[in-house]
Length: 116
Image (cartoon, rainbow, N blue to C red; front, side):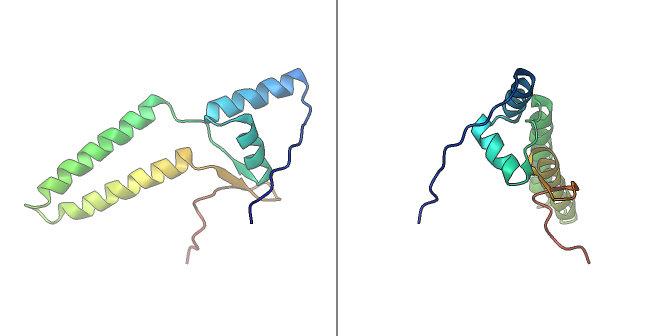
């Protein structure tokens, strides 16, 4: 069964709307998407600047080079795995929406694993 969409309108004063609209643009999502995410307790993050993506490209390049060199030195595979984890951690930290619980504690949506 499809989720039936319900149209609702809300009212902002000019200052509230400017803040809301600006934040949606910073996150690269529509105002409607922002409202839905906020209602579900998820706070999107502003899009990282181009330097963030350039840094990730450099990490990928280093990773690829080390992966090729690992044919000659297997110990480099551990470093490759660490770089892969670093890339995932950076993406999670700077791009994944934060989840807010009823007490206002922020946590990343992707961090739902239990720590022993």
